[in-house]
Length: 360
Image (cartoon, rainbow, N blue to C red; front, side, top):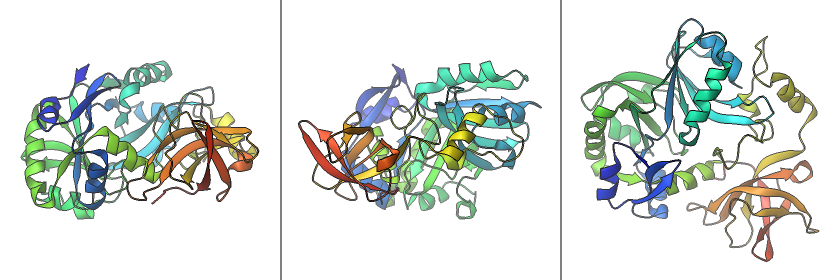
């Protein structure tokens, strides 16, 4: 298994380590519920160094990104980030990712850990125009500092005016005495906060400074378990669960990152435009359990008559709501908010209500 530079710190902090996409990562420290509430109410730190970073540079960089992305990167100005996905040419999704615009000829893509090689191969196969590609995943570490106290924590160790940063913007500046740290006002929790990118050799200096700065707010390391419950309360998609090579962005409710304006010819444009216009046969929906039960990935969804209508893609017990929540694809007839559906749990069919996300 690949180890991030923070691996020994996780073990020293009592992290329960698991194999995640070939990386040895902490799934929990003090417990998922405690870590979850730490991020919702205070500040927590996630090691997300397993994520991939790919540079796209040169005079053909934008041309390549316009071709491969569902969202339109040409609207970005330097210092802006954008959420988007790679349509796969067959109506599905290669991966979802963030695009960071440094200049019209310099972009950084942040991709899912499980898809680094797949995305790299896909970009190379689409790069007929000759953009410069560089896979920097092994050289860059990343921490997500999330929660309502994250800004106060980080402001102690950077001169960058964090309060002025809008959501989905970033700056490259000094943090914890380290130059050229990418400070991004983004996150996967819905609790506010920042994601920090830096060279591996600066990782421990930054980790120590962040934890020292956040001590007065009860800062804690947070594992992948709480990362999942936090993102699920927001209804954020997780690749491999809620979206994959068989789901289209339109089915997944990602029409807002699928832009058809102008003449931009991107992968699957015609197919996705048809889906947008004519509708889809299934939709990704959030649902809340009416009884005390926890939906899990792979459970079947049924209608009142007991006929199968879909499948659960993500599910958990929401620490904030104290209710079972989930997401899943349902036939369009059952996609209206307020519809009662049933989750097959063991031998029972437990009622749930289709709701609008976020759940909180």
